[in-house]
Amino acid sequence: MNTPSTQQLLQTMQDASGHLTTNDRRNFLRRGVSYVAGAAALGGVSVTSASGLTSNLPPNEPQWGRQLGTGVVENPYGFPSRHEAQVVRRTVPWLTAESISSISMSPIQDLKGIITPNGLVFERYHAGVPDINPDEHRLMIHGLVDNPLIFTMEDLMRFPSVSEIKFIECPANGGMEWRGPQMEALQFTHGMLSCCEWTGVPLKVLLDAAGVQTEGKWILAEGADGAHMSRSIPIEKILDDTLVVYAQNGEMLRPEQGYPLRLLNPGWEGNTSIKWLRRIEVGDQPWHHREETSKYTDLMADGRARRFTFVQECNSVITNPCPENPIRSKGFLEIEGIAWTGRGKVKGVDISFDGGISWRPAQLKGLVLDKALTRFSLHSQWQGEPWLIQSRAYDETGYVQPTLAQLRDQRGVNSIYHKNSIHTWQVGPTGEVKNVQIT
Ligand SMILES: Nc1nc2c(c(=O)[nH]1)N[C@H]1C(S)=C(S)[C@@H](COP(=O)(O)O)O[C@H]1N2
Ligand SMILES: [Mo]
Image (cartoon, rainbow, N blue to C red; front, top):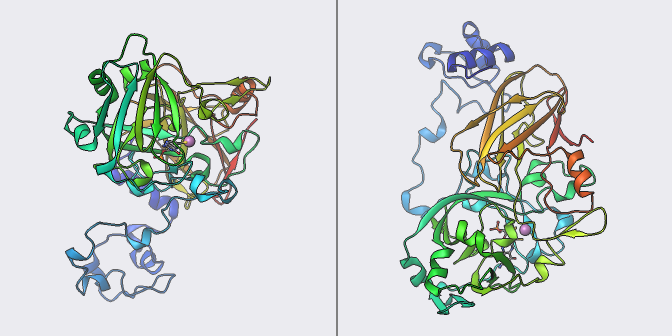
């Protein structure tokens, strides 16, 4: 089915649910289905819904329209409606030994478009969130440079700024499922992932100010938190697109995202985007610190480990349907999802309904940006048939998201990180959705 008109869509939904025909208005109103129909013509119809909440439904004037609302000064900083209280970050208890060194996942099953709202950006920290006074925060650049420099926040904000929409993904995203499916929720299979508009200064501009010496080939970025998390980054990445950012989605970084300053290595392992950034040292080789030796390496089947696997390869997942969003009625169904690649732009996404035997192209919708989440959509129909539904993304470099079998062939099952294989949801006869694997 190609893009249908609103009229066609409405017709399909009506046919499918079987009770929205226009010559049966009384009937569907009694069943509590909300539908915009000429209310004036319906005088005298008694309105009842399953929940027994009758008075707020048409043709009545709802209660909130019959009284004054909240005034402008009562909420100087806005929050979502209290009816959206279930849309929150969540942790997995057995992954959270200690809250200060844990991870909370973004509710990607509830998000629209490609931007993650600030309060819902996933959080990962190794030693809790420091409470940094920006007036006392400094960024030091030293090592193989002609002029070592110390910047205040004010200094940094005098540089011309850039704003870019980029995803950040922890390479452990999906890492609990190398050996089998165990997370019965999209939030837990893929929620170590967010996408924001970040504002700051290209790091190369700051390094130019310091004057990198010719032997300078790597930098070490270090955080000001108790973990003093650090990673070695090759200078080519910095010349390409590394940013030092102080804002996300239009406002200053949230403390949990690195306030007042973080590194952003677009498309690379989230752990390289050092938060609470305080120090950049230029050197001639990597430092081989804890996070690039004992952690963030990929143990292969033969017992050797891959190191410095920076890029988050092309990946995708279907967000509707998913375990949290089962199919609720037969008929028209927009299959939606997100795709991303650390190598540039997503080129396309295919959808399979039969576990990868046959594929149909989805449409990319909205903005398709470099190293940003990209939303895809396929208009479809569901009549109660069982599905093994999958998405397979490919990027502009020609890289195609691998099957789980292909990934396991290459990498074994000892890894935690970089599990970007094609994901399968099983849709059952009542529309319920389960996390399964096809091997
Ligand atoms: N200083 C510092 N930077 C850090 C971390 C940390 O613990 N300390 N965690 C890293 C990890 S493992 C990830 S995945 C990302 C997560 O970024 P977010 O919390 O903004 O989503 O931050 C990285 N930067
Ligand atoms: Mo991470």
